[in-house]
Structure formats: C-alpha cells, structure tokens
Image (cartoon, rainbow, N blue to C red; front, side, top):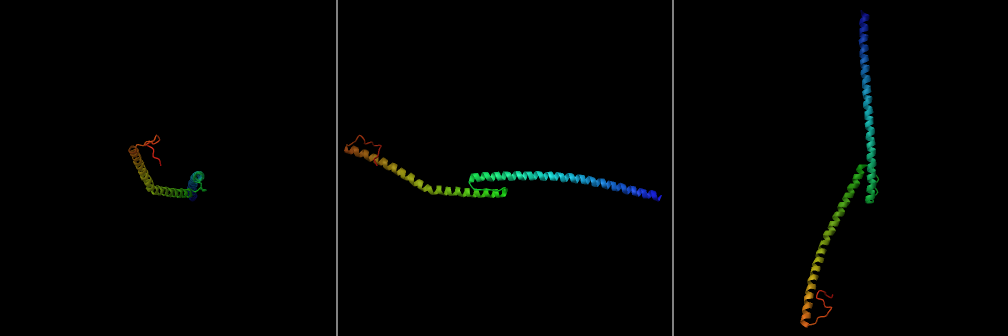
Length: 150
C-alpha cells in the first residue's frame, strides 16, 4: 500500500511538473513572440527616425539655399530654432520698412502740397499772361496760354 501511495504521489508530482513545464514553455513562446514584435516595432521606429532625419536634413539644405545661410542639421529642434530666428529677423525687417514708410509720409505730403501749389501758381501765371496780353494787345503766335515758360 505504501508503494501505491508513493507511486500516486510521484505520479501527481510528475503531472504538476509537466503542467509547470508546459506553462513555462507557453510563457517562453509568448514572451519570445512579444520580444520579436517589440523588436520589429523598434526597427520600424528606427526606420521612421532615419526617414525624418533625412527629411529634416533636406529641409535644412533647402532652407540654406533659400536664405543663403548654411544650416546643416538633422535635428528638428535646431531647424525650428533657425526658422524662429529667421522669422524674428523677418519681423524686424518688416517693422523697419514700415517705420521707413511712415518716416517718408510727411515728405510725400510735402511733395503733394508743393505740386498742388505749383499747379495753382501755373494757373495764376496763365491767367496773368492772358490778361497782360489782352491789356497790352500783344499776342505772339508761339504765345500759348496753356504753356508757361519757366
């Protein structure tokens, strides 16, 4: 009887070990599959990073061609810093241009006022010339009332 109980215990323990082995084998296969999936995902991410770095370098080269400033980077943050700096410079240049336009406005106003005065004086001169010609009775063929000799 003792041998039978011992055999039953051994049999039960053997079955437990087989289940544990099967479970461990299953876990190993599942973990290996997860590791392979993670490795594939890491490879895809690395490929994407390489593509983005290449695209960033291309943008940097194109930006260098556009602005005439050498930009050699594959770091998007550095490229963004360069773009922000250029935007700042552009904003300053626009402000400077606007200030120059605003500074020129009084001069334009003066020119317009002087042109208007000149037109008024020319008109007055024509009237005076016409009146003088009528008063003196002298009228030359080349004496056009529309032309003021300056």
